[in-house]
Length: 426
Image (tube, rainbow, N blue to C red; front, side, top):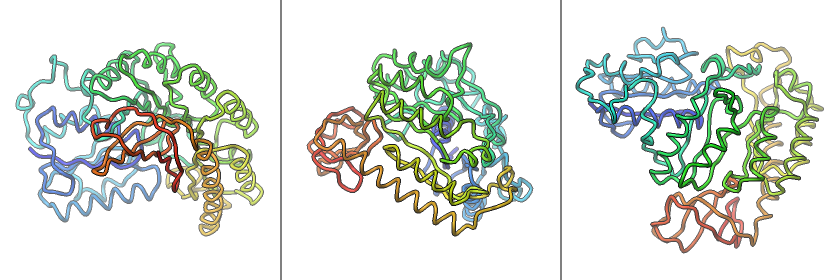
């Protein structure tokens, strides 16, 4: 039986999607390219914004027209927020968050594929919950993404994720270590730690830093990278670990969202700007070349020009390596969508453009400090002309001449000769 799989959205979705693809293949399904004819088509959806959800639903409807006989499955966050009744003639099977652990079995049963026809996985481990962590999912990228946690209960005013993913829950440290070993044994030099709210990782009294320290003991690990970390949680301890352990990438993404205390309060964020400024100052004092990334929302309901200028000033005052700037968009089902004093859409876009311009200036300034210095990067591909492409520990794109094709998936060091259009060249 053939299947195709399309993943929308965040790094967490990508990690989960890779896991499900491996499980379907292990169960005897044959994967074919998405868009081609397939017996089963699975969409792993995103719903962080209404636009993201609409894109998924548009794809579903297109598939139903072009492949009327296909068995279409919708999983992921949009299952919890979409109008299933309106999709009754489009989707054959909805997999809600409580059923994800049974996705392979449910799809097989609905398609009439008997369990005994699918065989057993290595060691006779039941195919429930997760793929055998002793075998790494088959990934198309050169870095491995290790999901350690899911769910969130912070309930920020603009965010639908707690509704879509539920309460926080963590994988056991033992399971995470087994999977990390499988990645390293498969030749991955970089492991990216991710989750829905990764800072909330907890397992029998152990926290995220304990997990990172444990993963660092895995033989063959080249370097360890963290996904986004909520400000005001555990980032101070993580910075301390980064300063002590060179294999932890000097990159930390803190989604600050706004530089105004009044807006942060409306957003129901759990920190103040004075606390953020203090943390950033301490971070750069501890690790001067630390790459800090952030997310910023422009035009949140009630944001005055004064509030906006405070966000601009925060961005100017620290050497941010990158910033993802978003004009606020209403997400139905969130408190912010019902708030008064909505900023006009055109003004949201204008403010976002101003912030993006400042962010680009800061990125150029940050990258310039690497001119003439040695940088280590993970080689993701080498083209026919001998140019190698990859990413530094600071999550800066790199292009390097003179590396053979067999260096793909390895860590290499080069001297930065120039910086061209936001890329370190050597």
